[in-house]
Length: 149
Image (cartoon, rainbow, N blue to C red):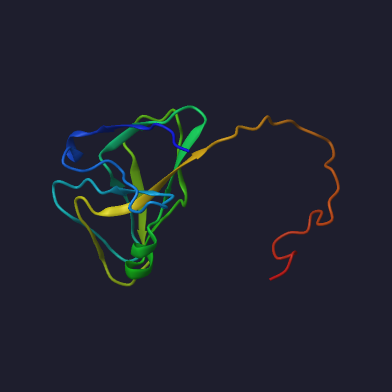
């Protein structure tokens, strides 16, 4: 199954490729940092919004989820603060990746570096209604850890 997503390259990303799936079975397409003026250094426990130089048009009923790349997470400690980050179908601004360095040494983010992955997913919007009571379940209102370790 596929869906058409249109991208606009912004002036600071003209030399970068569009998001791409790096293997035949990949769920996420890698997206890159757009830093033509030079690299950024991300200190341990610091966070930053990294520009990608891309804006996009998603069809109604879809979202783009921005997720960490596992290789960067395990090797350097680079993760994303709001994982997954959601890009709504009506947003037309630049995609930025909110990254955090969870490692103990600075991470250098360079122009063209694959910094995150993007998963396109369908969205179902709910109809919300207020009620005085809820249906009973076996779990009921038991909270965190109530179903086991």
